[in-house]
Image (tube, rainbow, N blue to C red):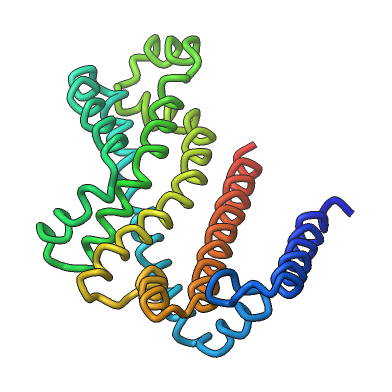
Length: 248
């Protein structure tokens, strides 16, 4: 029964929401009910799903780039103290800089809307993977490190054969967080490029619906984004459990 509790809670929320807007006669341009939102989605399902695929393409490419960049820099920090001194401040700067502030500059510098969106989403998704992997590399048991050094293992062997396997759970935890952040970064980047006239993903559809006062369609876009975020989180969680089970 507990397995179905979230579904039942979701359905009950939709029912209460629909009853609320009907009983109080809330205008559809303020808060549409689930029925109106579903109708708006069905009336433009093809276009909205294509927009969702465009957003997800940016999300997954950015997540892959964040994985490669985050793990590589974390390994460089673990291998060399000079690399740590050089990399860590810049990583923190990327974390604390709002992507909304730098997105217009990235659009101008990259001069390609899709690549600019990927760069923005990568910036948002980068830090959890980087910081978690770095923490995992540093959390390697000292006695195992001493054993490797007694056997004259090189620094590269130490990282590849000992530190990286030990850091795998940390990396997977960061990956699950970054999956949602990559979607957020893709949406933010689409808002910026969409404002410049590049109609691509769901963020542009939200802007378009707002300008036309198509509020149910806007809510349909938001519902698709929420569903995509839940699916990404669940998928990465299942992937993490599978990898950990196969290694144990």
